Image 1 (cartoon, rainbow, N blue to C red):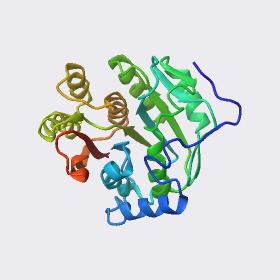
Image 2: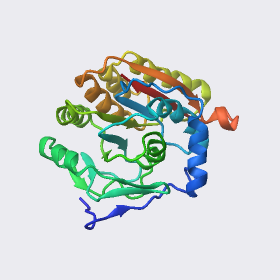
Image 3: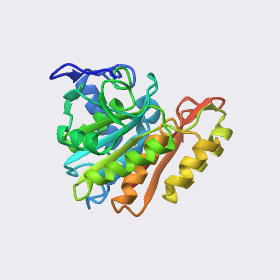
Image 4: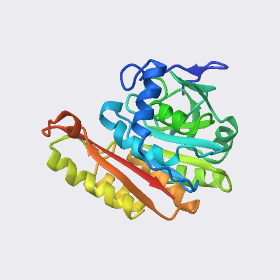
Length: 276
């Protein structure tokens, strides 16, 4: 797999397209989205499932999840995403030093990276899936405005097989037990169906989330009765959360791109959820 140079910081590739490239505009955009979201206040939220589309489309859905953790403190954040642009097996953990956004650099948690590499045979230290991929990056500005400074572990799943997803979730639970770490699953739902069809497909995912049933979700994704580009990352995060003691997942918002564009003929589904 491809490797990064020493002391490498990944530059933002989604800024200026998925979200504003100007720091002040970006901060203002996110702060406005987070403004009226009630904070959890208990520090009990352990996981977030949120979309990774352009902020104009999925920002309000992501904000209803991220707003819950505003002001919370975590030792680290783990972001698990799909790969949209590169094909590879297993899971790629970024082998550089950090991800840059217009709001600053989010440093990679090296200790967590080394711990995961030791215990999970599917995880490889690499730049594969991190180059032009947006599905990790778009979450970082929300996290920066909600949490301030934090280290993180960026994971990109290539081929989303059940074995890889469940084993990754089990490995994450093993290295995170006893630590205050936020787990983030990056996913959109169905793509480019009519709103009627999208709602039917997306309802299956939402029901599985509400039941906290990662096995059913994987079965539904494999069987084609539900769709989510980050379905595998979601299964991995759900697996880890359950093993770490989370008892429920609350869906805080469901929406489609058609809610913004007004075009219901071809939409993308978005879900925001929090786990406690």
